[in-house]
Amino acid sequence: MAFSLAGQLLISKPALHDSNFDGTITLLLEHNSDGALGLIINRPSALLVEDAFPVWGSLAVEPGVVFAGGPVERTGLLALGATPNADGALALGLHSLDIDSTAPTNDGLAIDRVRVFAGYAGWGVGQLEGEIANGAWWVADGFLADLFFDQPDQLWAKVLRRNGGEMAWFAHFPQDASLN
Image 1 (cartoon, rainbow, N blue to C red):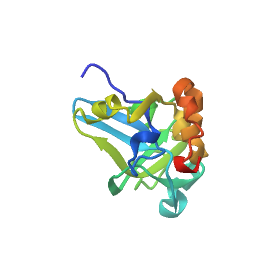
Image 2 (image 1 turned 45 degrees about the horizontal axis):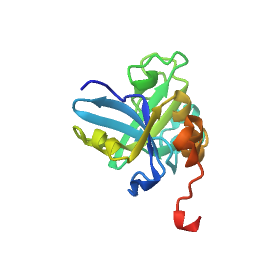
Image 3 (image 1 turned 90 degrees about the vertical axis):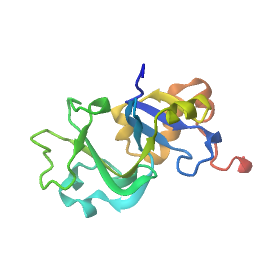
Image 4 (image 1 turned 120 degrees about the vertical axis):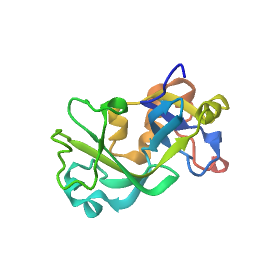
């Protein structure tokens, strides 16, 4: 594999027509010769992190809920944290957290922001590259601020506007184009 898209955002195009990914922004955490793994970062659930994992509640960035991270293993949880120095081993300097830990220090690190996800998005070898080539996704630079944006329902349009050009044209695309 000549390049990695880890740290990039996959932005669903309106023509994708897959209910798992309609209107989503997916942060790619891994992309290598074995495939790709990402988390949908703009699908909040109603479950408060504070209710499910009280010790982490104070670090859960608004809206402070568990996010639907993708269609794979929806009962499995992934927790990501950031430090002021963005010094983690994952894309964008993120840290993988032990959500069952009784202390939010994660091995002494100064974690100051947390997002928790149920499930993830995964692609086999060459699958994601094929979907991109077939026009299912826009690919754009990802930023920590995207993951921790406090209005996830507005993230898709925000990222499209930020990237300009063709993407910006779709920033206000209605979920049901027949209503336009």
